[in-house]
Length: 545
Image (tube, rainbow, N blue to C red; front, side, top):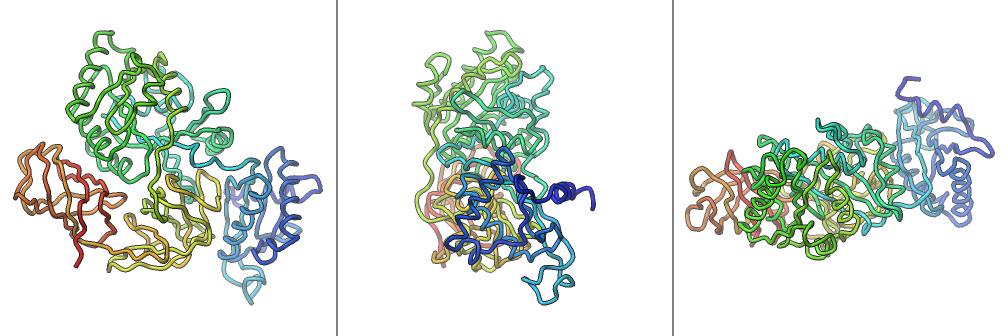
């Protein structure tokens, strides 16, 4: 058995024992194992396995009673995980992780050829005691800031509780992207996470360890996730994607005390506030400068906020309670911090512990696709942030628009969130949805998932009110930027109503996608950029044929 099957090998070697935590199942079916009588007994069995393992049980699926590798078809494995998830919920537990391997042949229950059939699936599911957090107990924060302004160092110190050494050692906790997980299904787009319980912060010991992140989620009554953005100017597109493409609750903008407000700072601030995202400004690296310099940077931050009609609120002067009560689309709390001395870190902790979850959009289920994966034993997976409504395993949905503007009917195989398999998810959650009825190659970023009875109308054109944040000259008719709307990133052509737009101007324009239609709705915010020019806008009307 190859090294990557060590988890499977250990589970098989431990085997099923009367008082053990390992359970073998060839497959689980809704008709048989969720029937009256069976559900209760299997729930009791799962609870016994979890208690025997001190809160953790291991279910090996796709094997015979004696541990032989039978392998089952991908559809049967997906159904088995759905059933196991329901059993875990009944037992007050949850599926934390699933790992799968291919084996030669599938069981007789799935093919006529027995062991000589196509490749089957064997999987190991880790089941843990405790339920998944409720949606109201999880806020998602998008970070922004100029390169070397201490964004990653600040977040690294927050999620671990460790002071930086002045050389950026806490930044090293976040240099890799933990959402690029082994199986590619868990859609955890955050690059840092910590939480709170009755005794205070629950932090990570090792952010690179997936199990440590899951421990924080399990132990916390309140969870805070940070979505990564990039400070370098050439990667502003990645920053826009993080801030526009996700359903964020708050923004966190860093400004280094030794550098102050830069043009990139102003651009990131414009993007945050143009999307109506309640934002906190953290002045970082205060240990490197004198108090006079900190005060000078505070004043420059306040000027930058007032220039865009926002009201700054110094938290040190007015207090945490006032900041929590007043933060809004117009009021921006300002905190001075140092990851080295830990100054201001307790203030950020207090704010993140108490800030309310922002209201999700009302209406039917809608999710714009941010990433796609192909997972062995599962198939096509679309990940993203649920914009409105809720989704359940087994739901029938529409996916699109395709290149020709049509939508395809698909079915939800399963849903995963923060390494947990869940039966349903609501607005604001970052999830991975396994889809039946479509190939991964046909799922693209910018597509949207909707209820099957929806009647969507994809468009190539829409009217918008835009503001030019930066441009070397002027924007004229035929200007071709890239438009970032939800998770859509597409080249478009602008036709300003007055013929042109100058830097700092606000005006109306027609926006036409160059290559394909998308689902666009009135009121949606977007960012556009081309070279050094950047701006923000709001969809005001849809142009249909």
